[in-house]
Length: 413
Image 1: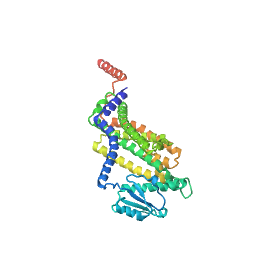
Image 2: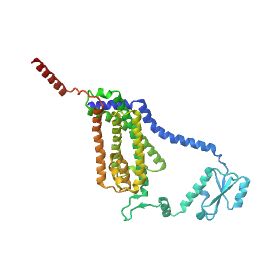
Image 3: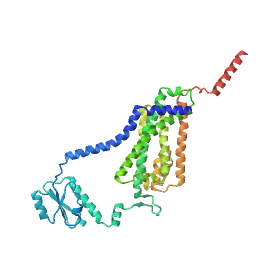
Image 4: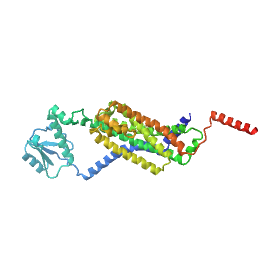
């Protein structure tokens, strides 16, 4: 019951703070607003710098028989087809067209398109023509060849002895998605760890913890405060994850792509959730430990930044170097080490076959470290605060009463 009381006090006091609410709701809005506002600003700047589009039509001389008036996009201007350059030159001289595009007879070999004008067309018109040409060329390519061009080559790495592939380029998208998820979970963990550090460090400095510890045991105090502050961070992370989910669903709807299917259909999704959850909790344990050690706020945040820089290096290693050498001693050791296992092990699961014993041992070590960290916080609390009175419980009252009666009996003799 005391743990629940401490938990609720920490949770409610933090999630109702104005700064917490502003950051929780403001951060996802800022992340969405920045690209939207930036895109609009860039479009306005380009529109201001670029000359206005001439509304007159453009001419097309198609000696490669690729285009058809029926498929003309006519956006932003209309198109007029000419049989030869003489007619197009005359129309250009009369001002009926602003320019004409000449597609040479050997276009399939040279890809050559010559545009003739008095004033150069805007890039929007060039884009219209090139997009139109690309669509018509793709329509004339046999489907099997077009599929091979779109898919590209599949490069598979293997050793001299011909052992199974360590890495295939078609795993790249899956690897990118996993790395992005890991990065943002780690980023959110660093944010919420700041709440953990600041709260415990401040109460450790002003002796609030020492007052609280007179009525509860160290384990109850650590468990209640830690779980409460952890719930504060998870609430914030849940809000951001919900906003990101809505953004992904919206983008997938407009793009016609199910972006979440790559993650939800992954066979190792459960392992990823377990590893990232344990790593998230481990970050909070580290933050709480630094707070109990009474490290100053500047030094504490400096340590957090150092850890984040280290994780950035590990992410670069895991994304670029690890897929090509997933079974080295360094890779195996990093998969088992609790502070790096979530990153390294998950990337190895994407790009190679990881032995079951390594997966099981990695999870045991990771969650074992989390459980051990809770008891480590208790020892830190006892070691870094002044001696505390024993909580007043019924057994303690009877014990103290018996001791008092015994002392009175001795004096009476």
